[in-house]
Image (tube, helix red, strand yellow):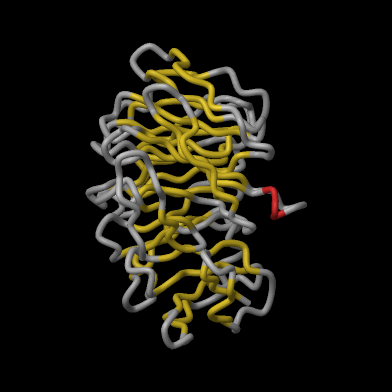
Length: 312
């Protein structure tokens, strides 16, 4: 089942029943009125949080190993599976728009470019593939990581792709040529997430070594090491104006250890720590304001210096 909580009061406001096995990920759509859940029962459901009803996407596709991602206009959602395929669905109808075949092992992560023309996928087999989202044709296979590629993201302009791996490194790739532009070394455990800054000059990587690192892409230099979390990091993000960073932990053994931290991008100083008492696998800033974080358990209001908190 899926539970929806009111964060300020820690009250469960809705229980969504329908999956036949453990739920592996939950993502809210931008309106916070709908969410998508993936389960070990090999199903994916789109829920209306107001009514509790769900649109069932046909099963039989395998175990969804990673949270879904959405196209920038929220018309499509995409996910990878342990059947070695990636897929795109129509959010409104639940129909499968495209199936991408070519990997030979579980697909851990997918991302869609901002113009919805490209889909990238990463796999247990240590490779990344870049696809034409319209035709389903693969036009690049990126090789170089020495272990499974856990996370990928495409830059806003669609020219570069970043990846994080079990080999403790992050890499930056040229989408057009497939060339590895930078190998970023410094983490002492697997790199669980990577994200470009909106201006495209920097990259943040987070790791199970409990740190996040900020890199200058042009030189490959590590500009900052963000320390202070007490558990493995799951996700990190830049604010839309490049002024702030956010990171979150994913401690399955003691959920009360989980925190979201907000950092000043210029200094690396931690400006806010939020204890969530929940598992959060994804964090991102609202593109319209620095005072709201979007996560896979809902939206969190912030109280940052000089910014009025925004409630939703």
